[in-house]
Image (cartoon, rainbow, N blue to C red):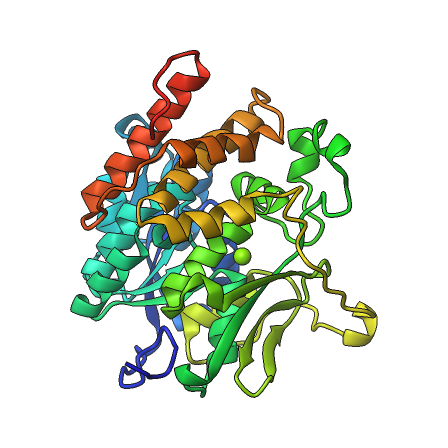
Length: 407
Ligand code: MG
């Protein structure tokens, strides 16, 4: 089927304003940026739900400001603490745990779900939003990495739509507008190269979490900052792009662009490259998704190309940063290999942040987990969660000195 490559079906009407918004991961970097967008345009949105993990204090502050009818939090003790922090006379329904996140993702009174929980934990609520036929502003790339084929299948049935918040995929979404799928030759994802782009192996052997967390262009959460430093973030984004736009991995190229001004491009069959440029600030792709197809003003300094000066591009150093290659290989291997790739990465990144393993051990652990994995069917969501949990358990057992290495 050749049609527009766009996450938005050509025959689907956009919901009217004000749009009713449920934000999962409200206390994280993406959630807070989304609330800044809403603050700029309060007439365009109603906040119906805010969900968080364990940051009870911050969620209570946001809830006092926005007064949504629904809140979500990780567990019952956190829910009790949250209830005690809310202003007198305000008694929203508090949803608890993964089940609670899924409830916030499928509320009847919400039009748009911002899925911005970090990591594999974002999959169940994204799936719930897809089943409920919602407009999903997707910042949780792992949802597609783990089960993009399932999310797509569910969306086709329910009429749900996934709009990419991830800046590269949003740039591609914008660069595809008005074009035919058959005219696309490649998607070109740009990568900043992370904080260690110019470093050598000797340096990488010594890096600390603080150094890895210090991203040159983007202000992001801890996990994605480490993924950016290893280039795993770009690897996950290659898989995300393949699922979003229905393309094979050989149709996706990666180029390092240290200034993070060109957010990604589409290469067409006539050799034209159409890209999206802008200040590196997540408010831009977030606002684009929340208001699509309307564009709204944002309190950001407009990009000056003269001030930016030169824009440079280079090949990624795959020998120093093997995670990109591992992601391509995992996606090509089977539907279950990307789950192992992601689980092993989440475990390895957490261990690095706790200073339990060195930086260069991250790709080694992932590669070992992939090598030990034998492909299995991934047709149902339960399969994903089983493979994910088994891989994490086996990796941790193995690191603790156990003998079971199979993921
Ligand atoms: Mg990105």
